[in-house]
Image (cartoon, rainbow, N blue to C red; front, side):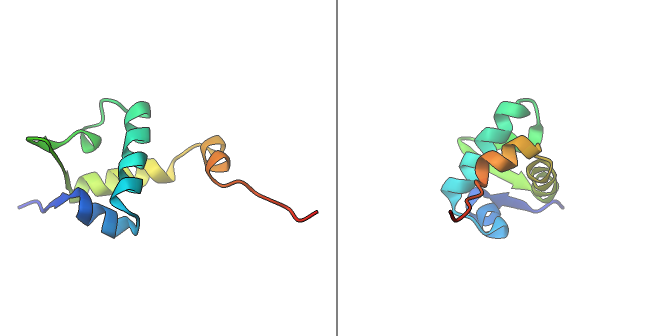
Length: 78
């Protein structure tokens, strides 16, 4: 049987807060609106399978370099 995880458990796996996880999921939903791993609910609660977590990891790791530089500003001492 497939293990079902809630948002709190997934956030703990990624080592981020639930709010940060939700922000990342919302960004991924904009780019991948039909991806089932981002749109699985029981009632109003979002749930994830272990496969969903793997897919989300792949999506997060495949962000374009443009997205990564926007999120990680490099500063130099002058």
